[in-house]
Image (cartoon, rainbow, N blue to C red; front, side, top):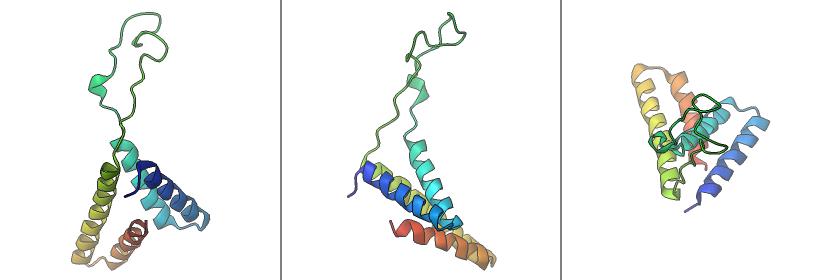
Length: 118
């Protein structure tokens, strides 16, 4: 299984290639997937330092005190995020085909192909 850094590198390399070839569908799905991984790494704000009074209203009380480290995902967690992105698109394809919107279904299928190629 790939490491988290390998997943991100593969997604960024594919995004770079998609942008170079001006593939809007591929660029969109790769950006959305990278954003989903970034969102999964967002820290839990319940553990953030509380604001204190002082020189700057609402500051956390000193340089660097307001920073919260991002979560470190496991490779399995990244794979789960990518699997969720795939599942969302499979569901969308099924819905579009059920509604008779074949152009939209084929556009989402193109996005699926990009993710499955990773």
